[in-house]
Image 1 (cartoon, rainbow, N blue to C red):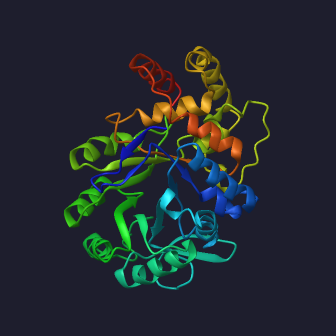
Image 2 (image 1 turned 90 degrees about the vertical axis):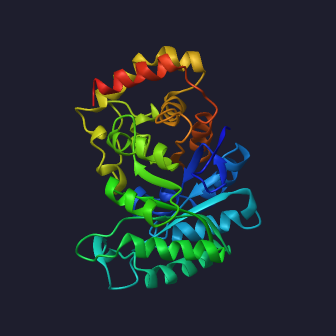
Length: 328
């Protein structure tokens, strides 16, 4: 497994990270087995994956608790990322979403982050977090200046409770505000070969400011694994229902990609999942992209990890881009 630096933080992590959204949030992804999820986290480390990403909102605390159990006695083996700025246990904030009668709110104000960090540390059973990421940004309905949020996070760094700061789901303007207010080391954005808009917005900015770009959903929540065909009956849980590529008119396009890339599967001795992950890792400047892939089963993490070993030739990267541009 290749490794890389995260921004200017001094933290070194595997180029592939394991995303724990699906592990901790059955309401979004369908039922999962906690014991197998923990085995998957342990297997990830055996395969060289050091970075694990979770959030309080995943399962309303269950995701962090699960990761805490998995890392017990192994904390120093992992680069641990979690998030802040989303609450379901208070009434103060801007509505992000309501599910099953639970109102999930955005609130990035320092006094609320002071509560969140302590709750996350308890659930994760640790006294520090390597990478603390603002999950969703302020909106006009409940404003909080980014300078205030970032000032508090920089204080947490000085206290040793966190080692680096990230932001997720940002605009370019918010990116600039973060970098003006403190040291931003990573942004986490939805990005895949089929949804490349975030790259167009941020690759140059990340290069300019020394910020790592971390795509989430690079496999389009399973569409790009090669396992879903035109005849597959897909369980469209909430997390998958938002992905247009599961539609009957789009699945044949994905199947055609898999057929076209058959020579690449043979050349790199891999399936579609590792090939897509390797392509994603090669984007931007080719050395500053950290790919976050969800996995809750051993077979999934073993496939994902293979993508961190593959280095694609430039001609193949360009050819794959032309292929996906033709359908997206």
